[in-house]
Length: 382
Image 1 (cartoon, rainbow, N blue to C red):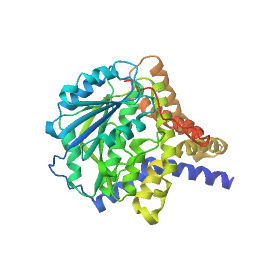
Image 2: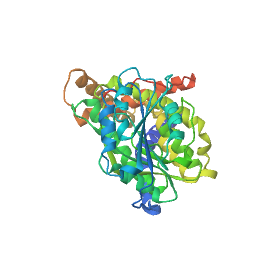
Image 3: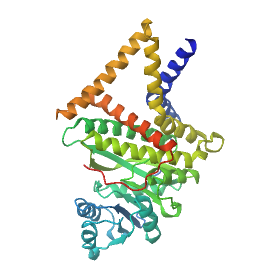
């Protein structure tokens, strides 16, 4: 029974560490270290690369958005890479040729990473900016994002993704809350040195630091890690922001989370050398805390529940078991509300979303240990 109790408390501590203790330590370190980014009003040539597969409903608005950004027009090129699209994506992009938009077609569909590998060598910009096909930037977002590269220690910069929950869905409310938490954590990690993970819809890299990746590798995780490996910082800039509609169905969010988690697990394995603290110092601890342990929380939660059930005959353990059941009942209530078209309530959508992402992580881990990989997917809805 002593061993059971030890494993239970270790699981509880690790789960709490990932979501609460690590951010508190990061907050303390951020205040002590205060590594600032020396931003400047620079205007290097920029190439905005948009990878698209069957994005007919969004690609026109996205191109128009990029053409209207507050940045010198003669210092920007826009490249749309069509990943074997079968709808009107190519025709829409070609319609902007006279305004300087370049279309590159990847004949055999190979996924976003392969599309970026094809486009970047053709880009003429000193800074490569990556945009999703449905990402709409704030007018000053590009200028703010690029200003980070005035600091010679910065190799990669990411902006602030704000998910808009237009339909008031339960899963959308959870996603919005989760991104607020992630953005806050990224601001702390920037003050420590570098962020762990970025948003692929609004991020940028020095072209000289771009490394071609395998098609199955996730670019908005592997590429920033490669930049850190080369000795440069990856920073978060909340002034460079975009709004994007959150998904409204938990099934869509779940599939997306499984895909991202699976590709991230492979990325962590590929870049496991960064977990060596003797070579990479604090960043190794950040990567372990923010990503490796985060993807393992499902195991801690499972162990907590099963062992807590075995220990529930004792007073303290019974109280904790009751709290666990209340939490999971709230998550089920969130699922019920979603299925019946009700409005989101914070009391329910946070537990619900928490369970969705951790079950997705467990599913992804199962795929990972069976060496499943994913390079292509159907574009997200929303």
